Image (cartoon, rainbow, N blue to C red; front, side):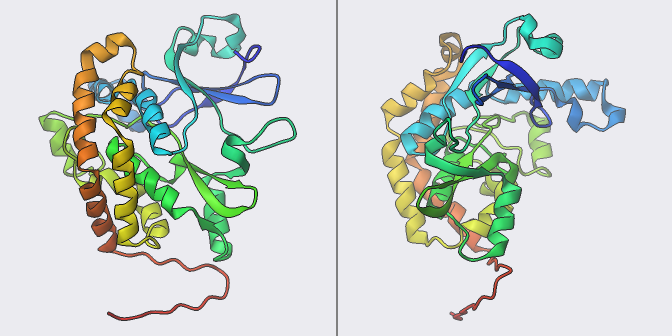
Length: 322
């Protein structure tokens, strides 16, 4: 791969075992294991107990092909995505100190999107890519720093379509392009897309943990589907009118054709498609058909509590009472 890769460091969140790799040409790559380890999210006294086994069992609620299917759908909808593949890391001495934990592990592999430099073009023409902390510091500086709100809305409606509820600010990076003053969203990490947290006990817990949602033909509660992204949504999306929401949702609905959905589902290995392909296709078609109505539900949910942000610069606010 790219002349040979060298492991650089462990990466990943609280559940994902990941590995950053680099080639000899200043390009970076990321491997993310499909098998999740939830032990880090438990308090120490519950680790190595039956509770850890129960939580580990719930990791099967996540869809192993989520990133592959979401990648194909993203391309059809114009939502930024990096080419992603399903791979097995070989049992190779080149893994070095990481060989014990990663040899023979199944996971996804993709190039890490970076900005333009002297040797490489930037991801989708990016001349600068920043994390969420840097973006919000920039937004606080001046009203001239703005995000591409329509692109963010498109990405958030896509999250609804695939039931990807885990969209907090750390799941995004932001890019600037030459001659364009806007910050463009780059969504990352599709672990929770198509997840199905089901069962009597799990659904009871979901009453207290709203983000435990289930993918199916019908959309789950909008509060839970958008809960992890609530701060960012309320900060960045209010500038768009209800008509703009409907326009973007209608366009997305038209792009997600039956052929697109079938092609996306076929990104699964044939053995997986035989198990879950038909169910996934039926559910996606139904969600596609009702996306406009769900977008309006999302709009009304945010409109119930509007967050208008100012900056550190001198500004004038015009308020019109209706």
